[in-house]
Length: 114
Image 1 (tube, helix red, strand yellow):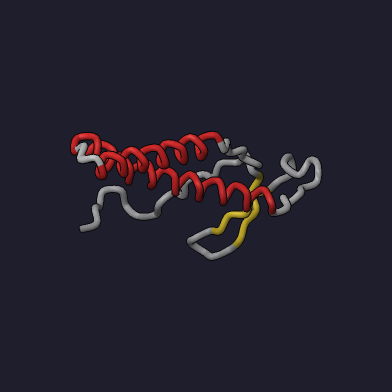
Image 2 (image 1 turned 135 degrees about the horizontal axis):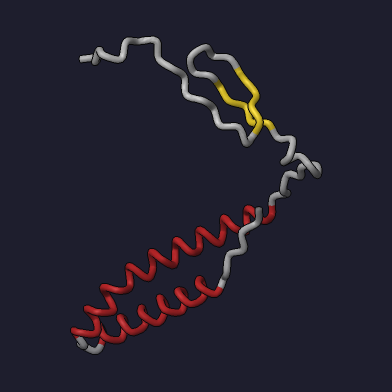
């Protein structure tokens, strides 16, 4: 399954980060304290979002560049899921749609472990 990642959000947050940095730089140099505080507090948040979007887009590009594994047609209908039995350590095959039944306990129901 290939997930398409829009690059528009990366560009929007990149432009917002650059604009906020320019406003912060201008307001600090021009002694505009209120504007400097507001833009200074929003700049780290914008940069964190920009970095996360860049990582997401990089991983999406990396994922799309790797070849996908191909399954033969009809493989889903005959697919059997392998389940490990914890109790005895054996490997059992069960059809994908089948739900395992709970095992009944041999302990007495009236006793509670302390």
